[in-house]
Image (cartoon, rainbow over all chains, first blue to last red):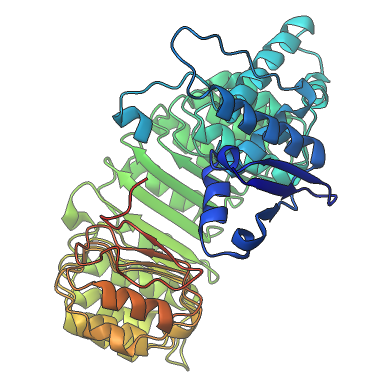
Length: 97
Length: 415
């Protein structure tokens, strides 16, 4: 499985699996259309702060891990720090996740 | 949606839901801890939740509306800011207390849009009029609790202040209320929208009172009975305000015929020229206007500023009418065009089409649209970003789509 790199506002980079990135319809279409992103497997998200983006990556990997969990398996709660909730909500809306 | 059809239930909630429940629970917690009269409550809430800039406030309002999560709790986020313009797309869960809080604690608002505001009551509307000193634009959808007496009082309070008033979906806004609006605010109004008002019968009031020489926006949509908005009424209104008009919407006024557009040709242009400043023209579902009428209209007046145009479901229109639009100066400025359901258009009109600024085009439910035309539309309109082809069964997966163009609605595409 290939790795995708996400670049945040201050230029710092975060990587996640292609499978996890595909869970966001927005990232998926950025990666599947014949855009520049396809060749580089790198997406620049200038609007998003690094700590928020880190949480997003965390959530996508969390989803990937548990989305096929069986009926009786326990899924842990996903923790979001209170002071980030507003900003994270806007970003989640943008990424449609 | 795909999961729903597959009868799978999601066990992981979306990140948006997680954030919203966190926000809501924190707001209620803070509300319990501090007394409700505490001045700093909303500031404290924003501090605890990390806060966002004023520019992002309307984005936040949209996200909350989209998730149907705007209520008296989350409303707290918007209080005590210096916001001047605020749009709530879904207020169905905001109670009249919420509106009163908004009126008291957001005093800088000049433009307020409350969609689906079913719980807005008489007291709350008057509060808004009294407590917001700068308010000059109010857009309401579904304010069905407001009665005649309150409308009277509201318009009296807003006398000569109200510049824009849009109202839709209420059966309690009557002829009397319309008269009251126009008598009190007719001179200051530059923007008026009346849509789906089942108790308004006398639309002839509108042309009588519109006198502002810089009037810009007129929408008369979906009257209770089709004959209520007649050619004469629209012609009279255009004679009053035509030369300055930037937005004209006559969606669902089924009684209108070519007569309106024969007169509109002269009414929309200023004295010494044959061009109009119109930017937005919405003529959806006018099923009596003919190709000849529209050819006469589009050939007789130049619309060099026209950006948005919808001829959706004007069933009688054929190729000549659309060709004439593409020959008009409007073709250089159009960014948004809907030709949805023009079933008699055979496709020849697209041969003359060259719209350098066009970004969105809806050609849904037009039998003539096929793979070849999709390719051609992409090539001829370099700025085109979105092409809607719902119900066009000749568009297949083989269609050649240029990079940068998104085609929506092909039968062969799956989610």
